[in-house]
Length: 247
Image (cartoon, rainbow, N blue to C red):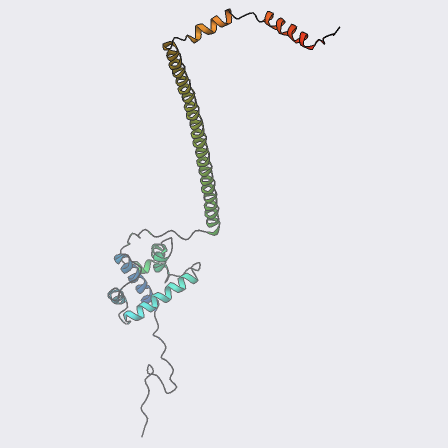
């Protein structure tokens, strides 16, 4: 009995996988153009299953999944070898790079221009990442901004301390002025009180018939002469001290 023949695309007894189908140059270029046009039409980087089904129309012999895997492989090759010219990668380079080489490749390939879609204006793409010197300059500028912020904060704190000290000194001067005014008022009140008390005493003495001011002045003018009295007292003391002689 003859064993059934194995198809070239079915897995053999050894379990080896069937190699993926080959892509021709025309199929790859048509896929790249269809993917570029679809991505520009939807305006986003990640396509849905329906979008990939629409892209797969450009390659009738391939499925949407195969088209997606092929585009991802082309994009990886584009990122790894961007400097080497490749007509199959120029269509995708429009979306992944800053310059649109897709239209340049069309001008270089006149045989493919009749079947190519009309040129579509590329959307605004994000700017490429900054080079290390620019990043270093931005870091230096950021450091300078940070230092200026710290200096400004310290200056503001110092000015706040100065204003607080000035307010404290002004309050101390105002308190000293208030204390001096209160002391002057207290002395003035005591003086008025003493004047009132002296006036009351003088009035009371005058009611009793005593004129203190006049009596004091008369006493000063009419003071008794004490000199004779002092002489008499001296003579009496001499008489007492003289011994008596008995005959």
